[in-house]
Image (cartoon, rainbow, N blue to C red; front, side, top):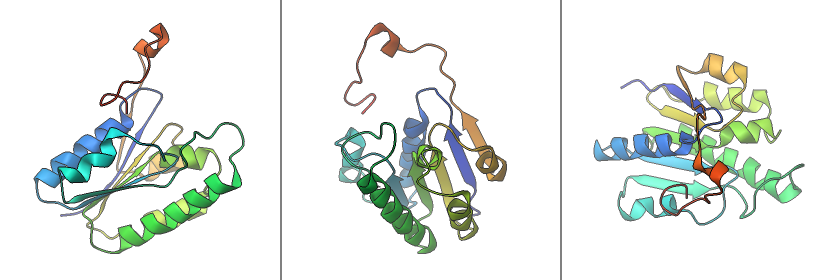
Length: 170
């Protein structure tokens, strides 16, 4: 099976959720999935996914706090180590699908150069499906991808003051 590059971007809800849904579908089909989450380092419900699916592995490359303004040195270092880890996993041949969650935001924040991401894309074995999520997908990445889905916010209950709910948003 040939693997493609998918990008889920936009300002609407559902990018990570779509990637997780694809991961579950793939796991149910017997495929091996790796999910690397950039900028995320706090307890979320999806971290328990391997309790239900032994063929999905998930690792967070972020710190417990959000990146506001200029990223701190430790946040950049964790992201860089995460990209190295993701690169090894993509190249290993062990995984059928690799999800790089919030990678677009990490690119937008300047954690990675275009050249670093292009090198990652160029090293992807033909069979690996690569899914990249996050707001602010750069135009060059969308042009390079085989599939791009843009989530557009039409209406959101956050604007009514409803906080993120466990199992729904985190």
